Figure 1 (cartoon, helix red, strand yellow):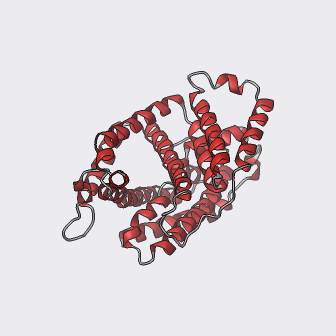
Figure 2 (cartoon, rainbow, N blue to C red):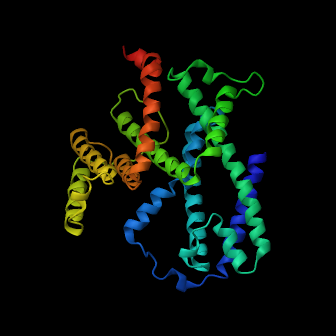
Figure 3 (cartoon, rainbow, N blue to C red):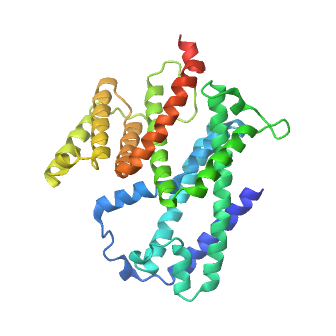
Length: 339
C-alpha cells in the first residue's frame, strides 16, 4: 500500500542519515552534554512530545485486526521502542555534526548535510520530509475518524459520525470532517502554536488513559484481556515518593513553592495539587503504581508548558465539555445503563 511504501522510504532515509552522519560526528560538540540541565531537558521533552503521536493510533484499528488483544499491545510497544531508538540516534548525529545552537531552523537535517557540502543528501532529506508529512496525515486520517466513530456508537456524538461508507466500509463523514478540521486551521495558525497545543493535548490524552486504567482496576465487571498491566501496590509507595519529591524541591529550590502562586506558575501549582490528590487516593484505594507514575509524569510534562498554552488548552477542553454536557451526557449508553 501507499502507506507502507512511504514508511519504507522514510526509514531508508533515516538510516542513510544516521550511517553517513556518524562519519562526520565531532564529539566536542557534545560538551557540555546537557547545557540547560535537567530542567531544560524536561521542558524540551514537553515541547516535542508530539513526536510520539501516532503509536496510540494503532489502537483505533482494533476492529480490523485478526487478533487485536495480542497484536495491538505488541504493535504499540514495538513502535515506541523502535521510534525511541531512532530518535536518540538521530539526535546524537545531529548534535554531533554541528553545535546544538545552530539547529534552531526549520530543516536541521538538510542544513547539516548542506553545510558539509553534501547537497545531494540535503535534497533527499527535503523530499523525504514531504513524504513523511503525507504519511503522518494518513495516520491521523486513519485514527481520529475511528475514535469519533467509537464515540458515536457509545452515544457521545451524533449517529452520523459512525456512518460507514457503503463501498469501503469506513467512517466516511468522520474522515471528511477530520480532514477539514485539520487542514483549514493549519492554513492560518502559527506552527509553534499548533505544535504546543498538540503536545499538551496529547499529554492530557495519556493522563486520561492512565486514569482510565486506575478506574478499570476497581471495576468488578471489567472486560477480559490477555494483556495485563503488572500490578505493584502503590498504597505506600506513591505517598512516600510525593513526600520525598516535596522535600527535595524545598531543599534544592526554596523559591519554587512561592513562585507557583504567580500567573506563570499556575501550571506547576495545578501539578502539585493533582500529585497530592493522586497520592491521597492511592493510599486510600491501593492504586497500581505503574499507571499512577504514568499519570503524574505526563501531568508534570504538561506543567512545563507555558501559561498561554494552558489557556488555549483550557478553551479547547471547554469546547469539548460543552459538547459532552449538552449532548453526550444525556445520550451516553454508559450513563443510560447506570440509570
